Length: 506
Image 1 (spheres, rainbow, N blue to C red):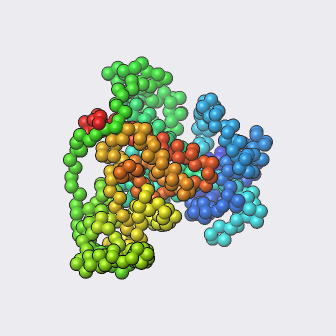
Image 2 (image 1 turned 90 degrees about the horizontal axis):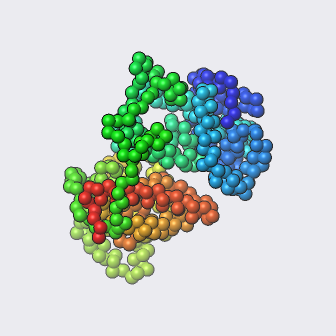
Image 3 (image 1 turned 60 degrees about the horizontal axis):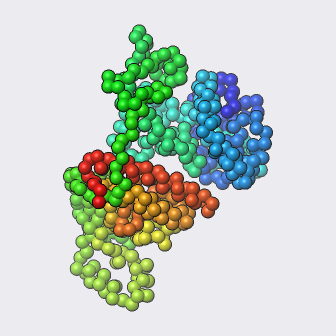
């Protein structure tokens, strides 16, 4: 890190004065150009040849390693850096922790500025409003100032532990927009776009584990006669002042505390599977309603049922064709094979199955909606094999929607989808992910409810957010990373279903 005296107040005051404009901070090794959020999409769409994230990170890393810039000039050098640094991450952890302690003590947290980019185009770059940024300029944004702006986040200085939970409750379509690891123009601490921190999901899970252990194993109180911590005061300084103190709960931990934490014994192992379904808890039936919408030359009448409570925008359709529509479908099925294939490609509305899925665009998710359509078209060869068939875009209730085939099967996050042995699950999910990666994409939202067990294979059902696989050399590593993440979720679900008596060994 590079430090500037009084930088925190400089950034805060600069943002307050010019929040919608670029402003500059000078430091001994060059100037930093602070960029407002409205330019983020423009910068995000620039190529690495024009605007480099790698050079931005290197420029901010420090001047004590004189050769690091040369290594960052090409892929070979970057891979050399990765090869050298990765094995040493564990032993460098303490050093990094001490460095961040220093950052906090100097009132210059790492999140004061972020999204570092360096202009590499010799001609500079021109932003959407005509602003010209010259060659070799270091750009960044001010996440801390943005997240403390009342125009961006309501009452940002007051603690409200349910702030984002309440936002999710107000609008179910926004459930993915208000999570800890979410990145958008109002929450930039993890970065933005393709170069957002890939470890943010692990960080989120680890924080939840730590918080859970604190709640289960400790009572937390302030020392006697201690004043209540001031809102916004840094945690490290609070700890130094002795404001927070922990005492073990009345029930002793099952294992002696280790480094201040009570580490419980691991739960007893469950069988490795496969399993069989004992029973499924009864749930409230989803509401059904008749709907009607036009798809190309056909008006479709169907009975719609909400897929589940977690996805209110997804409707399962049971199509009710009229007598004339049934005759048309029978007639087209009797045509010669070549003519039938042409008719199906040209007029897909007359070859629809009776069970369909209507996936409506969520409010504010137009970009993800377009991305999902593009992904379905890109993966056309896999439609009906590893992903649902995409028939086209329709409108229902004034909202755009994707019309998809109903692949059936069992959601992998439910007891019916959790009956596989772990080795079988890993093999099946690896086969699916590898095929998707060979077509250049991998699911970015790695949750089990985005995958269905259909017969002897696993199919992906949510393609709103995908990551591009650009290098064949990285396919195996990226597939392994996603597979291991899903395998951990699958094992945890099996444990829960086993403990609840919903599964037993087959």
